Length: 130
Length: 206
Ligand SMILES: Nc1ncnc2c1ncn2[C@@H]1O[C@H](COP(=O)(O)OP(=O)(O)OP(=O)(O)O)[C@@H](O)[C@H]1O
Ligand SMILES: [Mg+2]
Image (cartoon, rainbow over all chains, first blue to last red; front, side, top):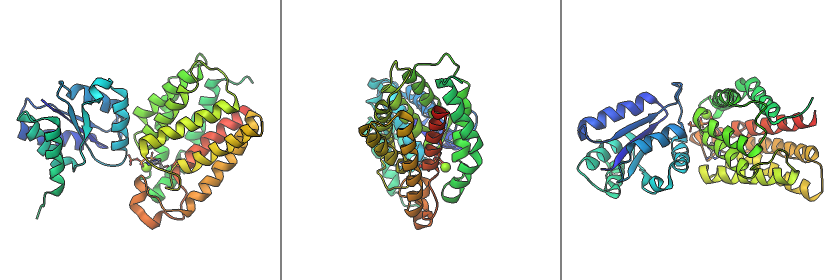
């Protein structure tokens, strides 16, 4: 099953999205929150993200949802810190973090491939709200 | 006073600490007012991980970079973190450096920042101080200058780079949200790089 990692500057945002998406996807879906810094500050931490990716991976790959700015730079840095074998099956979604995470988690929970989960997340970008 | 790597790292930490408010104020004008706070949090963590026993420049810069990755928090964390790690990779097992080696390390640091942040010269980032500094070092190597002379030229070039950042619009990072309103302000990252370079130069000169 494809794992999901939520990277936000804020620990509460990442945890909140994890709860929200988990409610739709069910308890078996791996969703790991990697928000904020270990001391509670706002920010992104490449090492925390690399650990989250390792925890989310069960062999079928991991999709990472990011908020903005350094979330992307720290996530790409994290990819360099994990085993190349795992890094080869981890991708960042170009998607809004809340809607993208929900779509991705639902898709992953039904056993979709990494490419399908990524496409589901990215479709959320075009979703009209009104 | 004998000069050590630990002494230099302490000097860097003292500079970042004393300039924390200034760097944060610069970031307040065009960003989210955290660059000084971020850098200071990073160097406060760094200083706890070093002692006089740390003499291998390569291994030390790698450790320094890894620490910044997980403690700075903003874009400057993975960018400086990668920069120090890439520079360290060029100095494995070395306890002293020539000017030429320093230039190679700065070039590797710049490449690391570009790999990560995908910025080029003229986007109002730390690169606008780092790239002129590297050019100056290259020229100093060609002219056969001493390490301190070469670094002084690099400091002058980096300061000109800061002045240049005042004249341009930011197209990378938080400041890019401001568009033309970023013109007239100097870039916080270009400033922190220049402060670190000046500190290292003064430390070696003293
Ligand atoms: N893509 C980039 N390439 C090179 N330097 C960059 C890039 N983005 C930002 N910077 C540098 O980082 C500095 C800002 O660092 P700071 O620690 O304040 O991070 P931040 O922008 O607040 O991060 P975040 O994206 O988490 O909000 C800028 O002044 C600039 O020099
Ligand atoms: Mg900032």
